[in-house]
Length: 329
Ligand SMILES: CC1(C)c2ccccc2-c2ccc(C[C@@H](CC(=O)O)C(=O)C(=O)O)cc21
Ligand SMILES: [Zn+2]
Image 1: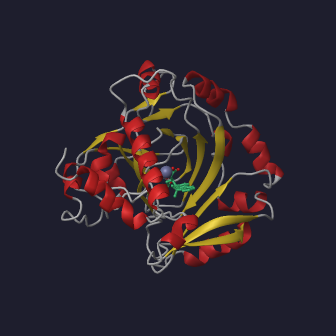
Image 2: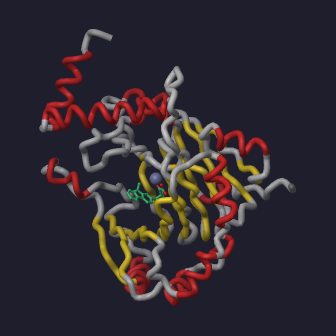
Image 3: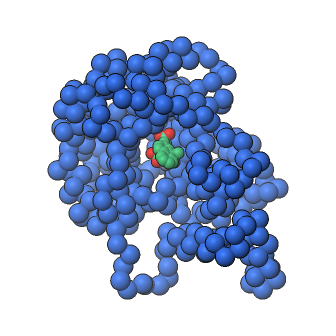
């Protein structure tokens, strides 16, 4: 297979620069043995020539407006370029929590109008994030049916993943940033239009990224502000090491479950992405040691949940953990 054409270099599209070291995520044709090796070991890789969403590569705002139908869709509105997700079900446990963005339910036409009127504004930004459901019009249905389902179902089987839970359509304004977080599902992140710079960090960087408490609305997100890290509170962030790639239309980034990622839309043009989220495969019947970082993260999450359940007050979890551990390990 011919060497896939290289991505644009990040210097050309002035993405945010960070001080920590990053290595490139390998960009390989999906037929390469190395690509298979990386996926088998739950490591990130940019796959080319999959044709996974080939049938959507012609999508743009006007085509979508003609074909997305009359249903309402979720659009997030943020006062900054950052779209920090939060779980609204956990907000009432944290009365001082300030919602970092607002959630709107707009028809697609309303979104397009708002998108156009927000161009050039620097006080408010929009990010369309909604599942692709069967409410869409026939044009989108036709494109959806022609995704490369054979290829993706072969991958699911080969890597023993769980079921496909959702296909999300993401339409981001130039410059939008999703702050660093991890998800509990495998993700085939497909770039359809525009460019996105992805920074990924291995699950073993967990102690350097200082996640919020599990009971906090921003569970699974890093507390560290990458733009101006507070090294007093988060000293280990100094040792962080990451991986980087820039996705072009047609690229598929495999974001393994529990891998941290922060994704920035290039300042050049709007970005359209489609994600395929898969549950993890069944837990192996025989646990082998040493435990993987992913397993340790899952265990720490369960411990936090059990302590919160037992103590009923999330403010008591930290003091109890300190009482158990301080001075003993
Ligand atoms: C984590 C979060 C906020 C979330 C919580 C609960 C339900 C849905 C989602 C959701 C969906 C898409 C994104 C954006 C994307 C990064 C990017 O492209 O900007 C990404 O992180 C991913 O595709 O994994 C982020 C999220
Ligand atoms: Zn994510």
